Image (cartoon, rainbow, N blue to C red):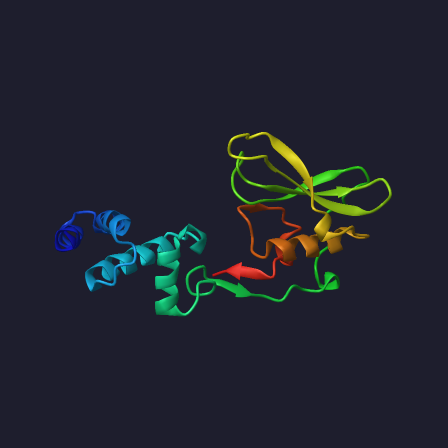
Length: 188
């Protein structure tokens, strides 16, 4: 069966799609196969997933383990994530002011309605806090507010931006321009 799948993938007009399909079909039957033909299909599929810009979060355990076996790790080699230094606040342009009582969306992890949205709130007492809005569950798609107490309470908007950027680590699907310099990791 594997000979036929590999040959069909190599001869297909759309080799990319056929390779992924052949890998997926055989991978369902024998996901831990060490057969070189299977590993060739798997390796080609992983390269295509990476080239499409998908993150390692889309890989199953066998796929991730194979990538690590060949490349040593996922973060920089698959996800192309690297560390950057977050500048001092004094070296950055001033963030747009957030007035007392106001709320501003700062980040969205993926498109709505499924993405988690992160907001800054400037409370009447002058402090700043982060809260998120996300669906309750896949069975109940009601969006609810969740206070992100673990991030803390802040006396400046810039301190909030630094904490949220550090929590999210890499730029999200969408983010406010004021948050951009505070991400400590970037994708190449």
